[in-house]
Every structure is written in structure tokens, then in C-alpha cells.
Length: 247
Length: 320
Image (cartoon, rainbow over all chains, first blue to last red; front, top):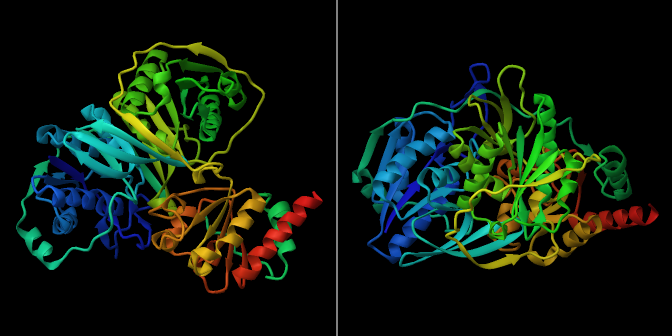
């Protein structure tokens, strides 16, 4: 079985969000970069778990980005995976990213393609769905459990207000979230091994973006908290009713 | 024409779709065109009622095979219907199913897409959609450069607008590919409003000290008719189920009222809730960072404050 895990580079969850160049660019100053948590904790670790069960499993990692994404892909390789591909395209339009991944996926004939449910920077939650259309392959979003039995996949996914279990046949694309796997920390052996794992760079082939970011804005600051005395909950209820008008 | 995708579950139209229609109708008015809805499968609801939210027509594909959601099948059918009907803008709710198909539909229509929009597009020059980014910590204004455009809107960001219109129903017939997915079980949390659709949410953190103390929170939620949520440490410790975890790596919500009990307000938690209209924070630590993001705050012992708040709500309801 061949698995393709899509890896994205995102700012650390505690990174200060600020913008430069007249609010048109994310301010990378002092930002720590990480593997997008959904890609790492759920997609990548799930692929590793599958390989631990069946050593015949081959895991390829793919990222679309400039050379500054290489430390992130090496970190992913330190957790696991056999080799990585970086498509040298810095465009952040989801359509461009998905088309680049689809081109690689078509060549690689993967049985399983895993993405995180979304990235924590642009929150587009689009790549899995776009790959579904580009590759004409079954897509199951928000997957929380996966079992492979030959060419049959048993998948559990989150639905609004519950869970749904289903059965389908490979190949499939899954977007993964909490439940799929447990977060791991790379060990020394993994970090050493990652240094010599192949990292292939493929030149960009898609250049027509369908969207363009015009500007960023920060949310307006809250006007300040109104403190209510702990002994006067009638007053809090009154404020929620009459001032905030939410109950 | 603006075409709005109607999401259904168990033959019931989802509330998120009413908001999507309201948004689509406002956009259609802005563009001087019509707002029409697209419904796949059969539902128990009165379909012409979708006119109340601003849809002039509902195009329905009466095929019961479509009552089970399959992203690949649904995206194929929606794209084919959009082409057939000549839609120029497609609107989806940014809920689980909407996220699963809107990007695939965009691919099939060679359309640019903005997911997670939180306001009507600016169409003065071009077509610019504002969406939340960095998990709610900022906004981005994104221009769509293609003739056909796809937008999914964040839940509770526009609101449901109810009028008195009635929609005409038109049946359409596009081929429905066979699904490769066999649904084997559905496990629903009975009687609860899904968190993403909830108007009122009561949420607890480590300050409640253990799962055995959740009773006071559940009582408060019950008095309000609110859904319950929790912080990440609480779900990680299995005090509460994972599906209640709100925050950057959990569910992002935007209710009218979010009451946070014993949650300090780490930046990752705020990212999941800071689009709430009103935030109430109850915490014994006056320095808790959550107070900076709150509208109303109560400093003190949650074990005394929460039951008192519940009593005050019940008293107010009895009086009203």
C-alpha cells in the first residue's frame, strides 16, 4: 500500500499574528514554524501507525512551498515516512496547491491520500475536497478512525452532531482530525534517519491562481470587560437580557 | 444567478442552510440577480418554505440515493446542476458537508473559491470576500478572479433573515453517479443541538477540577437551553467527549452567547470562540487572560457562582 501524506507549514499555535507591507503580508518576524497540527498529529502519525502494522506500507510526504519549508518536511520525516517531495511553488491559493499535489498523486498511484482537516493559517479546509474532484477519487472528510483490510477501508467520520461509520474501497482521500491518531515526538534515531531520507524537489507547474489576498485585518478590540459582582447574578442575567440581548 | 446549496441530514434541512440562503439572497440583491436554492434528495420539511429566507426557486433532485451524503457524488451533481442552471455564484454553509463539497465543485466549475466567509462580498470593484484566517485571529480580504465564484460562509456570521416569501419548486434531472461508500452505522447524540449550530454555549475548563463537577454546568446549560463545550485539557483528560472540544484544534464556534467557566483563555482556546457575539467569563483568577476577550466577567468561585446564575436565570424565566 502506498500512502501520500500532505504536509503544510504553519505558524506555531502561539505565534503572534501581525501583518506588514500595508497589511498585505503576514509578518514572519520572530514566528516559529511548525507542521500544521492536523497534518502532523493525525494524518502523518496515522500513516506511521499503518506502516508499523504492515512494514510493506510506503509513505511519501508532499509539501507545496519554497525552500523555507524544508526544515518542516525534515521534521515530518523524523517522525516517519520513507521519502518526501517538495513542489517548489510559493503560491498559497488552494486551487494551485491542490493541482500541484494532484499531479504528483497521479504519477504515484497512491492507495491512500491523507490531509489534515484544515490548516491553522488560512483555514481553507479545501485540499482534500479539491483532490477528490481532480483525481475523481472517493473523499471522506473529518475522518476520526481508519482501518484497512486488504483493499477495503473502514472509516469513521464526524458528522454534525455525531459520527458515521462507513465502508469503501481504496483508493481514497481522507481529511483527518482528532481521534485518528495520537501526537508523537520525534526521537533521536528518527531525527538522524531523516537527514538521509530522499527529499525530491519538483519545479512548479501550475501558475494560474484563481484568488488573490488583497489585505489582512485584525479584529476590532473588545471595548473592555464589564465586571459583575459574584453575589449579584440577577444583574448578570439582566445585562444579558437587556444590554447584550442574547437570552 | 446565485445558487445556494441546501444541506440536509436525516431528511431534515439544516439550520446552516437557512443562513446560507439569507446570505445568498442579500448577495443576489446586491448583484441584481435571483437567488435560487438547490436541494439534493428528499426532505420532510416543506420545501417552498425556503422562500422565507429569500430563495425564489428551489431546484430539487428527488433521488433518495442522495439522502446519504457522499462528497464525490454530491460534488458531481451540484456542479452539473450549476452548469445546467447557469449559476454564476454558488453559496454553501461552511459546515462539515459544505466544506467537503464546495472546493470540489469549485474545481469542476474552474471557479475561484473562498471558504469560511464572514461577510457579504465587496463588489464595488471586482469581487472581494472577507474570511477569517489564523483560526479567527485575523481577517483576510480575498479577490476571486474567475467568472464563476464559490463561497462557503461561516456559521452564525451572517444570521438567518426571515421574510414572508414562498419558493416555487422545480424538479431537475441530472445523472447521479453510484456511491462507492456504504454507510454502516450512524451514531447521533440525541436531543442535542450540534455545537456549530448552537446559539448559546456553556463551556467548562480545568477550573472545574474534575468530570464529577460538571453537574452545575449541565444545570446552567439546561436552564438556558444551551449546548455544552469544553477546553482542550478537559477533553484530553477525557473528562468530556472530544466532540465538545472548542478551540484552535477543536471546533470553532460563533454562538450569540458563550459562557466560559474555569477556562483561563489560552490563545488557542480564544481562536475557537472569539467570534462569539457575547462572551461571559467566570474565573477565580482576576488575571485570567480570558477577561481581556470577555464582554462580561465574574471573578470568584465557580462552584458558588454557577448555581446562583442558574437560579437567577430560572427566576427570570419564571417571571417573564
